[in-house]
Length: 352
Ligand code: UD1
Ligand code: UDP
Image (cartoon, rainbow, N blue to C red):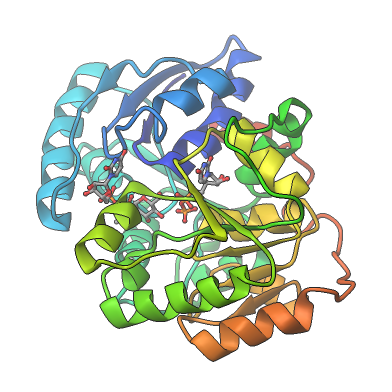
């Protein structure tokens, strides 16, 4: 069987590493990897391939830093050409980025079977580009790998036929579970007892008032506990454009590799983020998460009171920190599977 995996953004490299590892353990599958080029700095791309043993992409389309339409459209055109040449049995896409949607469209237009990993997640906020990407990808997929019961319910509500839905765990847990033994301290100087933060979501960075409010809340919290913030290049650029500054107690560092991120997750006191992936990783490491968004796709974390949604509300963010800093939270076991989701996915594709 031949599978084309389409990846392009940081979280997709982390998810895809688990699948490529499963493929490497069988002789039945040939994987061809298309990197769209969406993320391109070496600390946003190459580092994951090196650290996680992901096979070098068979092709890199080098499409990045464009508006949504131009980016998705150019990816679609180039992916289609590769699919016409490679003639795979399946195309596999991950998550909710522009690379996901472009890959999905290219596959179905050529009548190639399409599988979506991390299907069925919904924020119900269609102003998010990711929500549009996920809804459309799910709508046209032949096989939808759902990491939670909520994801299955969401797709059932949208009348996606039941025989296309497969309940698995979450591939990000596979990656954290496998790689945590290799966690590595970053080269940067890291303070004792710190908060690990990330910030990159378009709804926060592209709205000056929201960004100012989050930065102000973080600056105040950092007076009480230092924050380590590996800064996404998108946010770094926008902070400079808006002339916004983090306080000296916020240790901004360049994006780090996955092994360094696992070390930071293991060592930190709590997590503050607007990332999808990091909310789950906080849970994998038994860390409370303050989420800088109005809603989350990972609703079971909120229901279990180990994640709190604060949006960009300065007062709510500061209170969430004060209320939870010394609280003993209870982390339920195995919300996202047992660490063998990639094998489940591969076995299902081999059966269909
Ligand atoms: C994208 C995804 C988002 C995901 C995030 C993961 C979409 C619509 N968004 O957002 O869902 O959470 O990736 O990190 O697909 N940049 C660099 N170097 C890089 C990558 C980006 O400088 O290696 C800068 C460029 O100026 C670029 C900007 O960041 O224009 C935004 O990058 P883009 O890939 O469009 O969106 P992300 O914010 O990374
Ligand atoms: N990550 C990383 N280095 C960093 C910041 C994040 O390796 O400097 C990892 C993080 O641990 C998680 C993934 O990147 O596995 C999340 O990606 P991101 O937040 O960019 O995207 P999202 O999950 O929000 O789509």
